[in-house]
Amino acid sequence: QVQLVESGGGLVQPGGSLRLSCAASGSAFSGDAMGWYRQAPGKPRALVATINRGGSTNYGVSVKGRFTISRDNAKTTVHLQMNSLKPEDTAIYYCTAGRWPLGGDYWGQGTQVTVSS
Image (tube, rainbow, N blue to C red; front, side, top):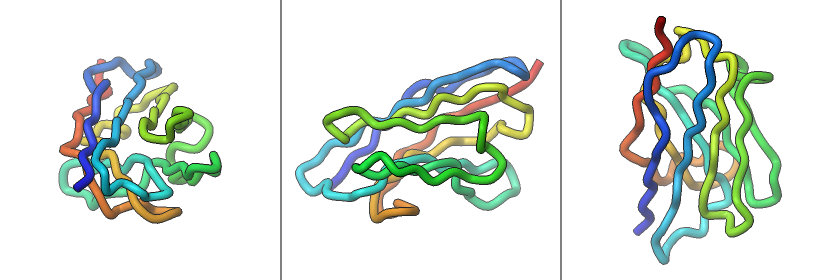
């Protein structure tokens, strides 16, 4: 079984920054992709970004140029640096792990990100 534990959500003003982290554990973890999806109220879950063990990345259109995903050397923790945040970035952000490029085999419980003045 794989466990994904997220941290770093919160409230930030428009134009501000936040950094999310997700740590994976569990003997069964062998997935190539780790990353993030988000879900705003009344909307479907949408891709934010994923990264594979080789460092290749995959971003959702709405976050390109503002968000950066990275992965530590042990390949079990992924970070999402979110800059120039907008109110429309407000959502629950879910960590995911699984097959490249979309992940989706395992999910964390989610962390709330709210962008508001």
